[in-house]
Image (cartoon, rainbow, N blue to C red; front, side, top):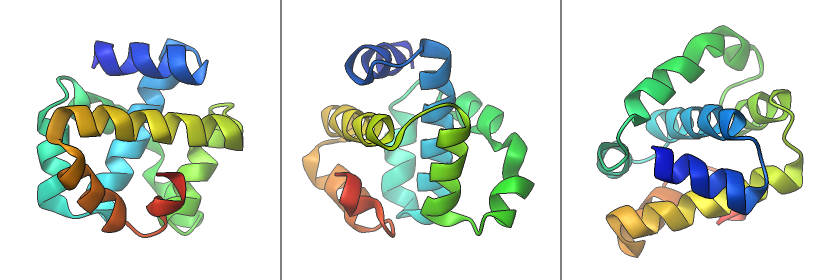
Length: 121
């Protein structure tokens, strides 16, 4: 997890605490909306990912009010202070990290199998 947080903080230019929360939010979204076996393979490759997902799910009720899905994720990330440009940078860096961990094919299946995600790939 530290490697991923460091990459996000450096490449996307965000604070490491925000990067950690962002990882939890995005992985939680992928778990709920993406192809579960592929997403779980990615989560299994990131030590600390389960804890980050659990920590980020505290506002699940709020996310449901926002309709869930990609819009709710965007709202949660903007609530952390991220701009749309920063969210796109974070997503791209997360996808690069995922490709490094589980391979381009599996990461591609996560991206294509998750509604709305391909616009960030």
